[in-house]
Length: 109
Image (tube, rainbow, N blue to C red; front, side, top):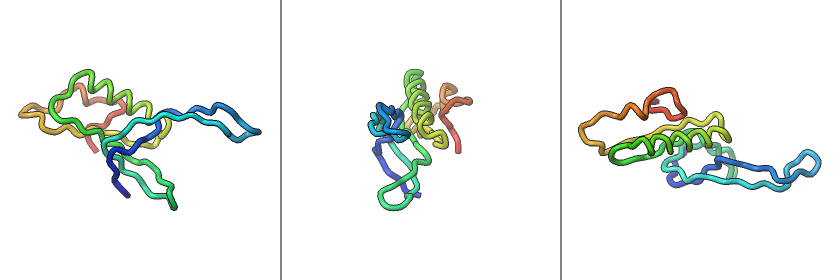
């Protein structure tokens, strides 16, 4: 298991053209992740396993919606991926309820 920071992870991959049954032209888009845990698969190949987004201070409803949307799009391409958020320096308050639940973001491991 390896850890990387600021690695780009695809959230969309479009096949624009095929030759017989093989894609020959693709377009992809990705988000930069804060922390990525991944397995090396030989050579320059790697397999993403866990994404951890990091946030300092309070978490707004907008933050929760943004992280949830990013988790959903990443999991669309990588259905086995685990996704979580690490919140630090949020004072004496507890983790806000808007981050917990059964959505695509896990608040505990």
